[in-house]
Each structure stands twice: as structure tokens, then as C-alpha cells.
Length: 516
Picture (cartoon, rainbow, N blue to C red):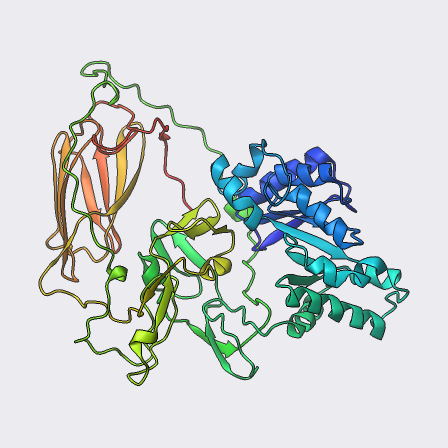
């Protein structure tokens, strides 16, 4: 279920027949797929809150609140000091939130984890405005059947007017206090009805526009984002790029009407008979001949010489616009996180304030954020909404422009995996000119001279961790990267690619590369 495209899944320990150990296992399994696990506990008890959050849940749903004091008591149990009194100690919580460190979890948990309260009793309805004001409460959730029973208006077909008025009162209290309002629905038609009662915020990916005219055209991406082996794009269209800025600039591919519900098509069901791999007898690895095999000492025992540090490359988003360059109509600010649009020459540039992210996007095991600030979220749409953390005068619509002549590329991203006999390396550089690219293999090094068709060039020499066979090693140029197959000279396992890379002690698996 967690792999079918849902944003979150609720593990129900109130009405579901789920033991404590089963809840722990379900939370870990859901989080491992990148989907957010939410746990509905059985009552507003501190130990239940602790068990759910310590299992790694990304949030809790708490039933049967009656007063604002109940809400404050819940926040004390769910939040770390100074907001609450939650204790720290479980290792499972960090594993389900992208493998963050304990310190990072402590710093982010109070803001990142959801505290959802159910408004389902007559007393809670009477106190809903005060409950909504309690700091640390994130969502007011309505169970209309229980609420109807408790206010004497049980659901018997259509909702009674008094129940509809109570639902609207709860939604209004949530919105006026900066909280989210949720309601249990039995189908998509009911979900759209209640979504239409809230704010008109289009949830189509690539749009995100506030609208008042439901007939206004909406240009968006109906598919989810796809990040694979350094390439970025949308599943619904073909363009693939390498940088995050280029990804955000991919033009939407579909035109329809704005919507308040996310109608991204669910992934098609898979045929297990086709996808299940056939059983195979594992191959017997050929023994590595003993002759010529010499032990390679740990870099910790023989530290490499320190190469000169390259000159720091200035981030072009920190530049200002060149006044000599013309700004195109409707140009968008090129700084990350700022989507301001150029208003034309009549507007004062000196009055502009650019709120942006000076850092880089960080995607790690389901957690998404920016390197320049602490906030981390789980959903890509929420990542796009993270407000910039730095201000400066004037937007950057065109920058300095491209300098004349060939542009030097100082470094490229690389990764590798290995087998018993080879090391397979990918260097990510797009538009390499196949007719001019040069790769020279030596016993302990590789020299690169990689010009691109867009007037860039990458040159470098990699000193390798261990010797290779230059005659048998090969390379090939692809559209977005250079692939190398390095044949090992002595069968040694490579913990790093280059001799001057920092050896973290991490084990690099020997085997065939998996397919995403």
C-alpha cells in the first residue's frame, strides 16, 4: 500500500486490531518507502504519544479531546523542550525521517512532526476556538459521524444543517488560527466538496497558483517529479536536466482547469508474474590468483599528500543584474526559492526585496530541504513552499550574462559501484562532445579532457585508490554522463574512488548494480 503513491498512511491503534509491536513494524515499513506514517493513538495519554513518536511516526492523530487544557497537555507530551516535555532516546525515530542525526532530529522534530486532534465531541466543538489557539496543534480533524452522534444530529443519509454548521465552525476556527482543517470522507466526490469549501489553492504540480476564477486555464505537470542517477524531470514529459534550477524551469506540459484536489494519476498496477525475477543459481566467483597480490595499506597509515585547494567558485545567484542587459518581459528571478516576476521598466528596481535560498537543495532518503537552513519536509510540493532564508535588495532576472570564450568546469559529480573484478564509474557532465572527448588510462590514474557542445570543458586527472589494467579499461559517452569501466589489476576492494578522497570507513558493496 505504501508504494502505491499515497502521501501518508494512518496506522490506526484506536479502532484497528493492532498491537504495539505491530505498530512499530508498520511505521518502519511505511517510512522505508518514502511515504509518511501517521499513528492514531487510542487516547490522549502521554505514554501512547511517546510510543507512537518514538517508533518513528511522522505525526499522531489524537481522539477524544474536550478542552484547550487537553490540547496543551497533548503538546507537552508530543514536543521536546522548551515547547513540551518529551524525552529523547529512541533510535527508530531518526531512521524513519531520512536518517538524520540525533541532533538534527531534536532541532527539527517540533516543527516537522504533525500533531492532529480530532474534534468529535460536543465539548470539543464548544471549545474549538480555544483549542485552535494552542501552539503546537497543527491540524483539527473532523470525524463527522462521531461528531453528529455527540451533538444529537446522527448521520442518516444527508448531513443535518446543524452538523454542517458545526463542520464549518471547526474549519473556520482552524483557518483563522493558522491551522489546517481535515475531515474524514468516504470518497473522492465528498473530498472535492470539502476541499472546495477551503481556500482556492491549486494543487496541480507546477502551478500552485491561487485563483478565484475556476475557468482560468491551469498549466501544470500531471505526473510526479522523477530524480534518477543525477537526472531530474517529470514523469509526464520527456525533458531531463541535471541542475535543480533547470528542473524548476521545465515548462508544464498539460493545460486544464485549476483544481483543489490532486488528480495526479495513480501508478498502474504491476503484474507480479512479469516483475518477479526468476530464480537463478548464484555464480561462483573465480578465485583471485595469489601471485602479484600485495596488501594495500589503509590511507590512515599512509596519508596522501594534500593537493592544493581549488579556488572557490562564486555562486552566480549571488550576482546582481548587469544594467547593460535587457530583461525579458515576465522574466522570473533566478535565485533559488524566489519566484518573483519582472514587472516591467516602469517598476522601481530599488524597491525590490528578494527572499531566496543561497544554499543548494538537499534530498536525502525522503527528507527534503535546503543546505542553508534547517527546515526539512517530506513532500516535494511542501519543499517548493519553504520560504527563503536570506534577503537582499533587487531580484536577479538576467545576472551577469555569459562571458565570451570557453567556460571551464572545475568539478563534476561522480559515483561508482564495484564488482570483484571491476569498478564502474559515472561522471555527470551533459553534452560531452564525443568526437573530441579524451580519456587516458594509466596504471594508477585517469586523465580527462572533456569538451562539451555548449562551449564548456572539464579537464582533470584522478589518482586512483588502487591499480587498474589500462588496456582492458573502457569508457563511453552518454547524453548526460561519462561511464567508465575500470578493470582491477589485483582484485582489491575499493572503499573510495580516488586516493585523495576521504576514507569514511563505509563499506562499498561488491556486486551487480541494482536498477531503480
